[in-house]
Image 1: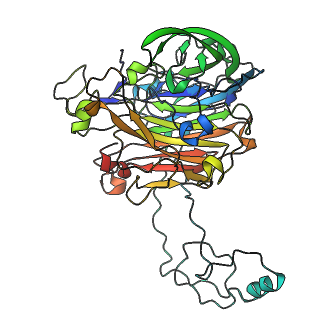
Image 2: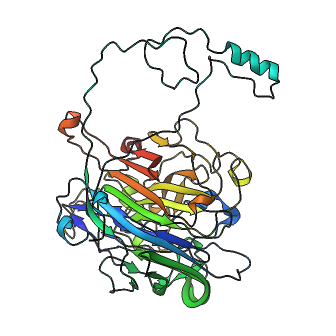
Image 3: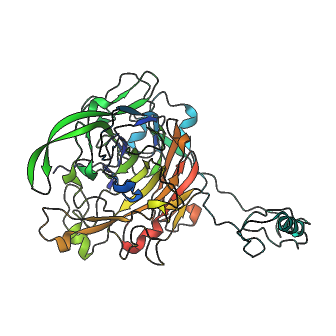
Length: 527
């Protein structure tokens, strides 16, 4: 078990992982940006077998090393496909931070080909998925209407309305007979200046024939090893990640056999096995780490929207763990708490209960490797409100964005059920065309070498929303963005030095997808 830390001012930094699925994956990453210091690892991995194509299992990805990772994933199939090869392509990757005062800002991490307009950014607007407004306080008849009834309602609708004293919360559907009364004061409140994030890391992938074998690239490492996680059906081959002549990072997934020697968790013995697919994962692990900021990538998803079997993903993992090196994540993934409790004392490898300083890490501070999934994508034909997604307004194809964290909360809802009051986290907001992922709320973590399972086993939570996709999201470039605001106990002059708890926000093509506020995590002690 080898644990390597990226440290910045006493705080662990996060590498970035990009991963793409095998078998029939074709992804293009155009631009990705990271802010503040980061350990970047592009990774490509294959997905766990998805029995029944459950959305819950789609959310079960591993974010390791909070470097950047791209991976390719293939799901288990009874029959092997006669084809063959698909690719994931990325054209650029950006990371921006505010303010840029760390050593990373001038350490050669910025690609000279990154255009000037992409070297700064500001937080995007959050537009939540609000419920539709009621019409005149009454529910309209949901059945079929005849022409006469329609004309009557249209003729008498909102013809005589008093002016509103204040602006309405929802927009009006029809013009009012008289204008609304003006506000009592014509003086607009001061508008705070937008926060500016400066470019810290970028990669445009413009150099052709670039490879990412171990030791070949200063930013990324492509794995050359078997993937033991999530019932993976693929082998990670470094040859399957490269740049083409068009300025793209290509992650190729193909039907190709690889014989390996693996460990059987049931018989507890080594055995020979054959993986029937190859893909790739690139990681920034232990090369570039960052904590907080804005990360952005332009990516073309592989395959077709209505054909399942792939599990492309773009995600972050704390640098204490490294994906596919399963020993590094035991009792480390996805812990994020500095509260000393009976559970963290025995189940968290580096907990706030530790009173002795080791390896330069301050005592009384919990450490771990939580996971932030910018996206995990599941294609297929199972539509919303049918089958597995019977109780969800979002079906296949979809992207799942999530924050996976421990300690987990109990009680939690059953899979496939919407939370009752007090069963799940507060301060969650979804955007348009999204749904809370009720098919996967988290994981129960047990490890074979633990001698005290009652004390050492622990729950971890997956706080995730699914966002509806369609065929236009596959094979074409789209922009995926994560905004990560850190907690601040002291506050700033802008908020009168009030403590803030940070947030995570996800965007697709600059449209809001999901927000997790730090206040909602406090009841479990997570951060």
